[in-house]
Picture (tube, rainbow, N blue to C red):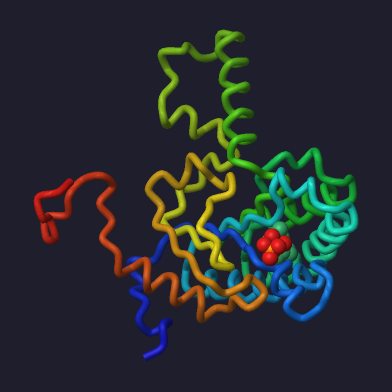
Length: 250
Ligand code: FPP
């Protein structure tokens, strides 16, 4: 039986976050420039998002460009931005056809003008779509996001809009870029690295992590199905105990 047939559609994760890693190594293995890996990563994005939407996953968040990625060679950064602009432009129709809403989190103002403009246009165009929300993390890092949220909370306290007594988990969540999006139940990272790399640090407090050695350009829908089956076989306790499996340990 294939992985897809093993998925229990009634217990799907509503939000899957993915750290797409290994593009550079994939290209290097073939004696090509790193950019070639990013280009081939687009097919993996397309297949994974389409498969998620078809299953009924309501939210997907992809780590496409981190704050730290600005430190890569200028040639690679420029090529990645160009690829993002072109892909967003080309795939807007696919998003419309599939009823997928595009969203973005991160320091979007820091993106090159044309990339920012294309992104905002695609976000606006797909705004009424409601099958799935696809969030691209661009110029994003969780520490940036949390710092940004704290600054805005402090400003609102100063302006008398909120009192320090009102600051709690749910208030902070409203100031994060992911406000309104449920926390990911499943976080996938490709390429055999076991790190979180400054991604969604607040939101993954109770996420299940799935690591695969597949390099991102090789990742396809079957790999997504496998990750979901693996997730569904876990015992999620959120710090409590599951009566059926309790062994005496919390
Ligand atoms: C990590 O691989 C990947 C990235 C930094 C970029 C991801 C971008 C894409 C897949 C292109 C298009 C995406 C969208 C959403 C349109 P790496 O370069 O860190 O690989 P390495 O670890 O092997 O060096």
